[in-house]
Image (cartoon, rainbow, N blue to C red; front, side, top):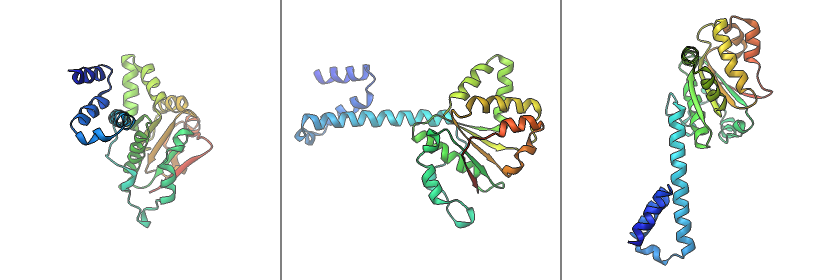
Length: 231
């Protein structure tokens, strides 16, 4: 009776992992040889692991990554031009803590989206909020938000995301209206959060994707340091 009361109290306090571990301990007589401190430590460890798993599940769900990619599965064949030492450095996510950006360029079909999503997966595993967008979809959501009155709310959410992934940059030339929308997002996040931009257009030609040269300068103004990759 006392045991069930303890489990109920743990669940009421939303300590679901600890409640599960407590029941498992009761079903394993061999654990009775452990000290109270050791058994309690196992309960705490299980609760921590459970919470981390739930957090990762929530972050990945909200990220809406296009592909189930991870850095550990990257193809490092020489012709791909991916430096393993660079990837090892970026996998620590210290660039996210410094609010730096990653620019990924390469022709269609070489795996830019996979690499971007792999970085997104790693960011989630490190506890950073992430959101994947194709640029055309982001513009669509921004225009729709202007129409239904949720524009300010959407900008606020985008500003708070630790890592914003913008895929398929430059597939079309952006009009002045589209460019202003992109500028709103970029300016809100500048020096505060990190962004990954994936494009089949070489970086030196990115200005040509924006019809208004003044807006192009404002949008493409980058922080002092970025990691650039060609795949």
